[in-house]
Image 1: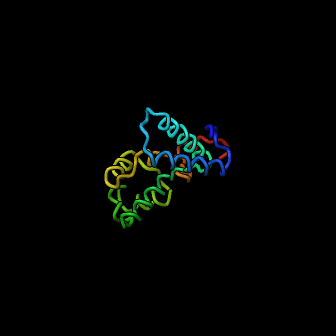
Image 2 (image 1 turned 120 degrees about the vertical axis):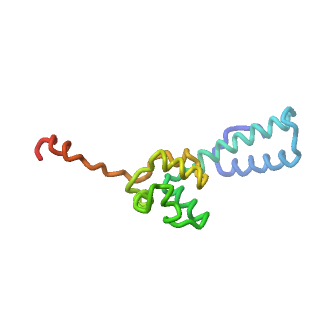
Image 3 (image 1 turned 90 degrees about the horizontal axis):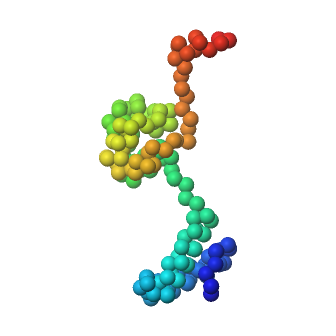
Length: 139
């Protein structure tokens, strides 16, 4: 079989079988079988990326997941987030994470900082200051 771009689930299953068969022999990378294994594995990987995309969790979901993994409660992470009220606001998606919160969560809970710096699904309401409200015409 000549390697081609995978377009169907049937082709995907066939290529997976070829990868398994080649990998079972553990060919050296500089051999023809090693090069073939590398190419077909790349085709399989590309198909999986397009067919089964993986969505990164938002920061709050990542925090909640890690809390569940480690059996933590909100009060256990309150200090990392600046107190009970802030922890409550962050977990309710009413307050964005600050840089110091991100650092503390990364260092203490080993949550990748790349996940924590993303925007959450919620949009935060920004209050207008009294001065800005006075400048708004028609109010």
